[in-house]
Image (tube, rainbow, N blue to C red):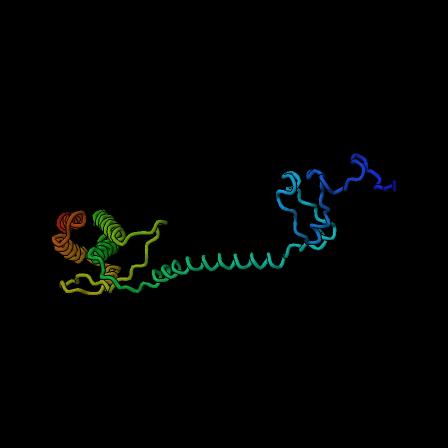
Amino acid sequence: MPHRHTVPPRAGRPSGMRSDRHEPDHLRVEPATAHLAGSTPAPTGATPSHLSATVPHPTPAQQLSSPAPDPVGTRSIWRRRTLLRLVGASAIGIPAVAALAACAEDDTVHAPDPLAAQEVLARADAAAATAAIALAPQSNAALNTIATERTAHADALRTEIDRVIGVYGDGTTPVHRTASLTVPGPDGSPVPASEVETAAAQPATVAQLRDQLVRSQQSAAALARTESGYRAGLLASISAACATQAGVLLT
């Protein structure tokens, strides 16, 4: 009988059997170079899940060839974001600046407050009473009382005028342009307020001061009939005080 030569048996396999047949799937290992060369990976069912989930580590060549972060591109992104924030802030800030500029450039001329003329008369009477002391030192006490009371009247009128105009949160008064102010003159006709203030600084006799107080009393009483509430009461009180000063203190 002719002698048949067989392939030398391997460890763990019967003699004459092919090494790639009937090999369990969990013992079959795909070479790592197949994945690196771009070959198609084995189907999911070909290997167990604990082997198919293993990701091969990159080789040193792959680590060297991976792109580094681009600092120039990162800085460019930050520049764009900063620019967008600045544009957004400008869009909000421009209307606010425009509103402030409109308030600062308000050229509206308002009519004078009705109490403004009474304030001018009160300060003029106080100045005239002080100046009259030089001509009538014997009436020093009465003239000082008149000057003090009329100054208090002027301050009360100014407080009410400022209240109507209003104040800012920090206590400052807004710009409030008004037309030229006129006050009743000696003959009853309106005259510029500056003329009355200038004349009040000149020394006057007691008789001249008395006539001036009478005109102030009549003017305050006439205006009180056109006002209401606190303003009407303030003007009535001023009118009564002027009548007392002219009829009692200077007699």
